[in-house]
Image (cartoon, rainbow, N blue to C red; front, side, top):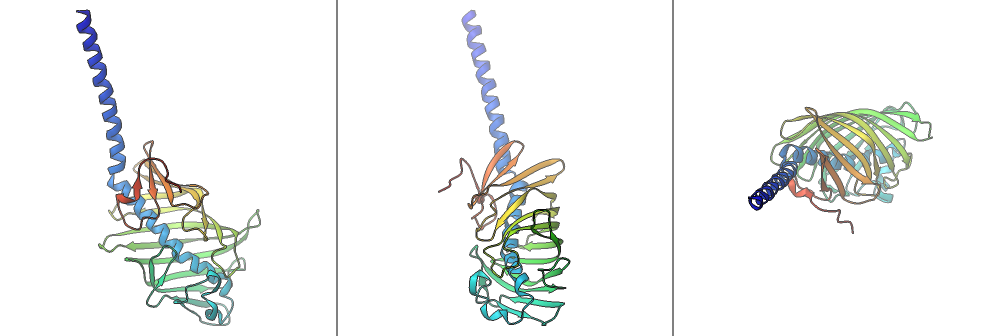
Length: 296
């Protein structure tokens, strides 16, 4: 009888262990296969990539906007691609800068940029109080259509002696399959280096802000940058910082790392963490990897 009881106890313990493992694996699979989370993270990363592609060009125009005739050397020093046509409306402020990508310019992520961006400037962005408005016209990057309006104001120097720009933007990304994601946000940019130069590669910026977004499945999330994003224009990827996405009390955190220039970020939900390969250009689960970071 004792032996039978002992065997029964061992069998029940085995069932409990298996049930626990099954539950753990189920939770893990739920994270991996949670299409809502995969879609919103994918949309977020695609939006950040497209924002980075065009913001670098706008930043390069800050220093050049107070001069006429700079279009002739637009391809030098990492300013603009030779295929972009840059025009300035006037010698005096206010003025407009028009960036026309013509038949297409290849961006730093390898995608073709087309369309026109118009930047209206009240004053050179080198002066505190200057305001610039950005509007996209028929802009595409790769197979994605980008609608965007943005207003930024130079708030002057902060306590650390860095220039700060603050403003708001609305944007919509429409994908090849006809789906789209949109967002509204307020944003603050603190220049750690490169403000006032015509080069884009020397720009190092801390970005803070919050807002809301609707992903390509029609689900609305709140979005906040909980640790400022470190953007170095000489690197293809965001170096560090975290973004918090919230919906119905559920939180998803995107962490861009510790300052290295690499393609890896992590996504955490319900205590489980998975990796995102930021070099992936497509949408969907193929950007997610298991295991440890494959840094070379």
